[in-house]
Amino acid sequence: MIFKKQYKEIKKVAEEIYFHPELGYKEERTKEKIIECLKQMNPDVRIEEFSTTGIKTTLGNQEKDLHIAFIAELDAVYAPSHMYADKKTGAAHNCGHYTQVGIALALYKYFVKSKNYQDYNYKISFIFVPAEEYLDLAFRDQLIQQDKITHYGGKPEAMKLGVFNDIDLGICVHAIGGEFEKRTINTNCDLAGFLYKKYKFIGKATHAGFDPFSSKNAYNMSTLFNVAVGLSRQQLKDAEKVRINPIVLESDMSTNVIPNAITVGTDLRTLSVEYMKEAADKLDDAAKGSARALQGDVEVSTQMGYLPFKQNRYLSEFVWSAFEENDEIDVLFNDDPISAAGDIGDLSYMIPCIQIGYSGFKGTIHGDDFIHVDPEFIFEIFPRFLAQVFEKMNGNIDPSKLYRRSYEDYIELMNELIPDKKGI
Image (cartoon, rainbow, N blue to C red):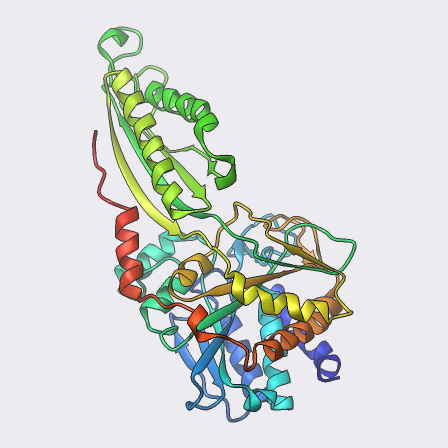
């Protein structure tokens, strides 16, 4: 009954965020709205702010051994052609993060009103994290240069700041891409990790008409590289959901000068860290071979994106158990990995995490027409289901099945993935 009574209020807040999208580390209006709601729901709320716009608040006393985080993401995507994009910034909520905020607030108010959390053997923290989307990097570079952040992604930044140091496991939720006839959730949808590769092909410029004979054509090297990438796809494992998308990032070309430099960039997505390393070596070899074949050079640089996300199968069992007793959700999909990525992969390296998907949208996720069409499911029924999941976890989580790695362990892995690879 609590979820029904608060439904309209939660829907209104979520839709206000939808119509006022903000990019990562810029979610000031969104942050203030959330803080306003938390204070209205619980005058005694204690709020910890982090990473410019991040928020953390905890329910439960310090004596409890286990600590669960419910995580919501604040930022929008850069999509200026979206039907409700911000005209000035190009931000648009076409990834559904605004509904995560609504769901988190619905759960928070339920716990405050019902006081059920007081009987749980664990504490619950609600953590609203900025900058999940990997974009607007020039602005984030400025923040890094100003020593305001260290990481592009909000969760790795929160990890660095110790926001998750006292958390034992994380629960996230996310809109499912696609349209569904029935109310649907999913579990164990593993995500790819990705890194960025940049290849600067270096040749020798000459007059294209008078003396092309002594040139070394950097553009041709990049073309040969694209051919090599295309032919190499046969050697990349289908099960790893490998995705490669080379584009020209920088060039200085004219028709009467043989180009002496061109930079090609590509993301590289795989489902495992181990295969990411192998595939990156294949790409590097293709670039080096293409440069050598035409007597040029290439500079190779690597920038880490996010780690692959392997959902914790043990924790997902609590979701299945709740679903079996639920008569409001029609379908549960399981074990359907995709090549999309998220910084939840980085957090899952530190602590076990799950991300429960939910339907209720139309249009294409990250597309121009994405919007919710079943708000009752998203803001009332699904949060009520999540409350059932929390009930299932109470007294039943086996600490021996959890794990913890440190932020230092995470940085060590990052350094393994992005070694210095200049030149050939």
